[in-house]
Amino acid sequence: MPISPNFTSILSKDWEINFTQCTPSGYLKYTDLCNILQLTAAAHSEIGGISFYDMQEFHQAWVLSRMRVEVDALPKSGDIVTVTTWINSLENSRSVRALEMHVNGKKIVGSETYWAVFNTQLRRPEALALPFEHFELFPDKRATTEGFSKININHEKEFVFEKTVYLSDLDIVNHVNNVKYLEWCLDHVEPKKILKQQVQSFEMNFMKELSLKDTVEIHENDDKENSRFSITKGEKTCFALQLNWKQ
Image 1 (spheres, rainbow, N blue to C red):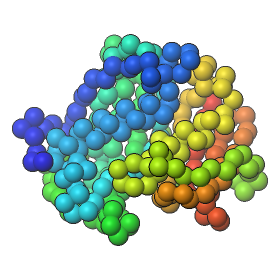
Image 2 (cartoon, one colour):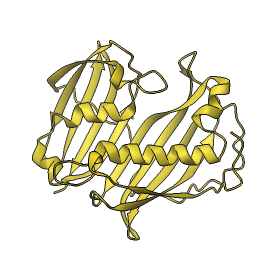
Image 3 (cartoon, rainbow, N blue to C red):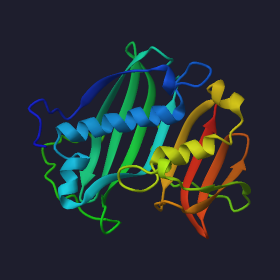
């Protein structure tokens, strides 16, 4: 699609939280929070002419590499949330995008995301084939108090679960959707911690893609301040998650 006449370098979009996106407590699931953030990023790329369908002319797609989410509070079913997004940096094959979620004018979530341009035929990163100079960049406008980081995987970790990748785990790029990794790990967290919104922030590192019928192992390592999960295929770590708990 061409660049929209309504294009702006900072986009705000409203979403209504519905009951299918919520936990039994009535508040938004962390997985659906990530989905809403990703959908807002996709909406911005669409009006800016660098959406999935634009990029597929060159067999390219944006894939998430790292993500940090800081949560002050979660919206509940029926709330109207406003998600605002802008780009901190964009060059060659990588981009850093910021997102904020507000309810009634109050910021409740901030996120920093790191994206890579991925060739969906060659299955490797490459430079973006589309023009992007019309995007104004905001390198100093941060949505989080801390940036994303490389998660330290402790080798003294505990085996939690073995998982086989099914069709329902795959997305349009034909690999496991980023939110699925988070879902698999959160299923092994003490439910009360999730229902009581004890997550202060979480970070995700996506290292290697997973495909249909792959078999993986989920591992966990805990301390008082955080929980770390890793997903491995054979000897290789594909994903890492760190959950930072409210003290």
